[in-house]
Figure 1 (cartoon, rainbow, N blue to C red):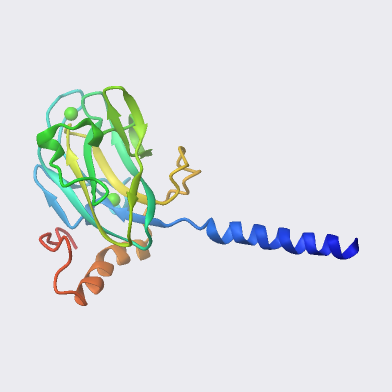
Figure 2: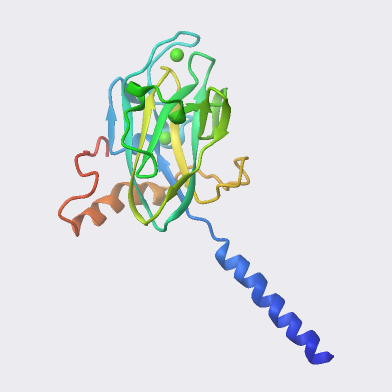
Length: 224
Ligand SMILES: [Ca+2]
Ligand SMILES: [Ca+2]
């Protein structure tokens, strides 16, 4: 009987250790303004309240419409295959300044959502005039749902944030394999640290050194 209890404890310990180990999420924090390429009218702008003092947007006034051109492209090296979610650290003043187009290849097709207006890739950004986190969703005609992207292998992926409405702002992006979390604290979101920025800037260059060309090698570094 005593040995039975000890055996049970050993099994339970192994079981919970296993959960703790397998529960580690991939978490990558990116500065929006450190995108590999920022194409006008999307621009990098200053705000002392933004992470590292900068953010990206197509400049605009509150309540005024406009947009549909310009984008920021990110090459994101994911360390393992799996399902991923994205969070944006954003400001969206009003109903005329609260959306982007988002595609993340190769989970998403190579599609220019600004041209196709495909609602699968339309992100309805949570309103707020101060910086806040919003999980990237798709705003379908049938409703708005959190997005998940499934990647079959580790390596370079290609994220595009395209302007849909001007004056919508992105400060930072958080990448996570925690696709269940629907609140920022559950998802363990964080703004980029100095080390995160170093990895974002140098990680790619180091990685690209060993290869003839990166998959998304046509992109150039927009900002250093
Ligand atoms: Ca606007
Ligand atoms: Ca920033």
